[in-house]
Length: 122
Image 1 (cartoon, rainbow, N blue to C red):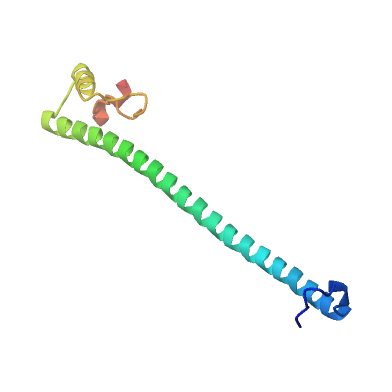
Image 2: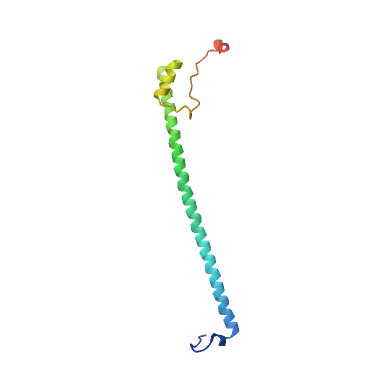
């Protein structure tokens, strides 16, 4: 129903005005809800992507650190196998040459092999 330009809006029947107003309000609420849902989905995707990127970076850093220490321990095992019996002073020198960070790797130490007959002495 078109309203001529010179007629007042008050000449439109009340029921029609209420329907138009209800339609405008309902449309506004629907658009607001759709905008909210879309923005929430975008924000969740952004957070997920950002978290994944940070977690992968930290995991890669941790993996590199573990690999470095494992490589040092493997090199120590090769040295020990090639030298056979080793004394405490020589073991300390080897550890220094391999540049072990003894604060981080606490299990590297000189442990002599003791036969059953000599265990009481230790």
